[in-house]
Length: 123
Image 1 (cartoon, rainbow, N blue to C red):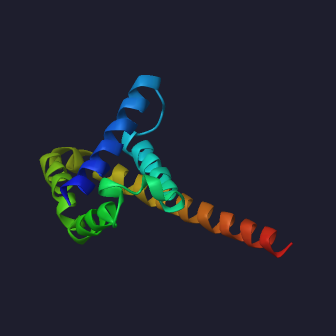
Image 2 (cartoon, rainbow, N blue to C red):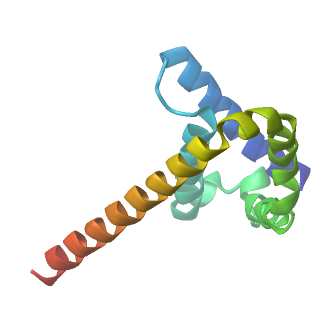
């Protein structure tokens, strides 16, 4: 279990190093997650890679454990919101309006993309 967690954190670290080293406009953990995905896909194709934490669902077991306790990972975000209540009080209406507009635009973009892909799939 410790080795699986180390593999996840190592992939995040490698992603962070690559992003900072190449000045990429991408979060390091996202690149690390993509790298971990590539490694896990390669593990499934090539048996010789399946060693250590990559063998016997080591990473998957840790991932399930993290997902089981995902709500605990939101505690720091909640504390950050409570610490910035003065900003929320000063700009609350603007923040709510921006959230409403962004949610609406996201939903419209999703629906339009779905309709476009559905039409293309019929052809």
